[in-house]
Image 1: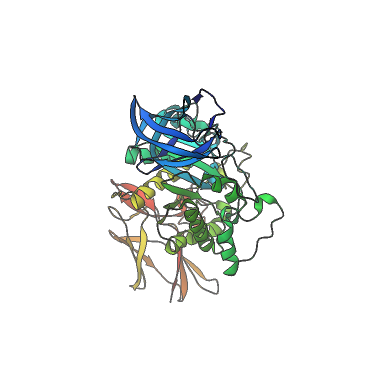
Image 2 (image 1 turned 120 degrees about the horizontal axis):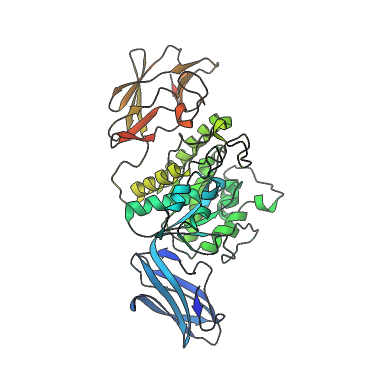
Length: 480
C-alpha cells in the first residue's frame, strides 16, 4: 500500500495509487490537497535511487496542481510527494501508453463473464497465463450525476491492478485483450482506465454543450424521467472527473442497434471529450458485432458507425461483423444472454483487432491492420464486378454468403460471388435494375440456411501470412 508519515497531510486523487500507470513522453501532471500550512510540495519520480523527473509545486489554500518533466516508458518507478519531512510515496508505478475505455455493457464485460456453452470459462487459459506487470487496469465506479463530478470518487477495481491470474478475471475482456495485443506491438507498458456502464444510450455520455448543439441541429430533446438516462449524466459522473489525467487515446464500444443518425451524435461526443481533455485524442470504435435477432438493424448500425469516421478526424473503426453469439451457442443456464446474444463472448477477436487498428491508424504500424473496403462497382458480363482496396495478400472467399440484390418493390436475389482477381469478385445478376446491393444484411448461409456461427453469414476477407485476416463489413449501395 502507499506509505506516508502523515496520511492526511498529502492527499492525491484516487487514480494515483500503487501500481498506477501514467502516460509516458509528455509533461506529467500531478495535483492534490494538503494542509494550508504547507506552501510548496516537492514531487519526484525515481527508480533505484535515480531521479527521472521532479518539480516544486506551489500550494495555494491547501491545493496544488502542476506538471513535471516527461518520464520515459518503463516499470518500477516511485512517485514521492513531500512537504518538509512529511512524505507520501506511491510504489510500483509505470509509464507507458494509457487508454480510456468507454461505452456500454460490451465494453464493461469482464473476463469471468465469457463462457463456453457448458458454462466453463472461455478464457481460463488466458487468465492462468496472464502475469504481466506491463499491463494494468483501473475501473472507475459507475456513477451518473446531474452535475459535473470533480474527482473520481471510487474504483470498482480497488485501484490500479497489474495483470496476473488473481486480477485478470475481473478485467474488462476487450480492454485486457486490447492491452495485451498493444503491448505485443509496442513493447512498452499499457494501461486502460475503464469508465463505462451497461445499457446507457449515447446521449448520457455527451457533454451538455455538445448535446445543446444537437438540439439546435434538429435532434429531439430527451425527456428522461430516470436520472441515469438524462443527457450528460454519465459524462458528468464518469468522464469529467478524468479531465486532468493524460490518455493516449479512447476505445469506444456503444450504440448496438442504434443507427438513427448515430454518426452525428458520436461526432459530438468526440468533439466534447477532446475539448475536455484539451487534446485531439484518437478514437477507435471497437465496431459492432452481429446479433441474430436484429441482424439487419446491427448492419445499419455498423454503416452509421463507419460514417462517423468521415465526420471527425483522427477516428478509426474496427470491423467485427463476423463475431457474435448465435442462439444455439448460448448456454442454457446463462441468464446474462436470454434469447438475444446481445453480449457475445468472443472478446479476444474484438480486443486484438481494435489494438491492431489503433496501432496502424495512429502509431505508425505498417502491417495489414484493417478490413478490405469497396473500391468500385462496375457492370460486366450481365453482372457486377466488385474491386477492393486494402486486400493484404489478396481477397479470399470463405464460402459465398452475404450478397443480395433487393428492388424497391421487394423482389430479391441471393448473389453468389466468384473470385476473379487478387482484388476482385464477380456477382452474376438476373434481377432487374434498379436495386440495392447489400452485404452482411442477412443471418443466413449461401444456401439460405441458419448459420451455426456468425462468420458463416459473411464470405469476403483480406489475407495476411497466408491466412484469413479481416472480414468485409456491411454495406449497401444503389445500382441503377
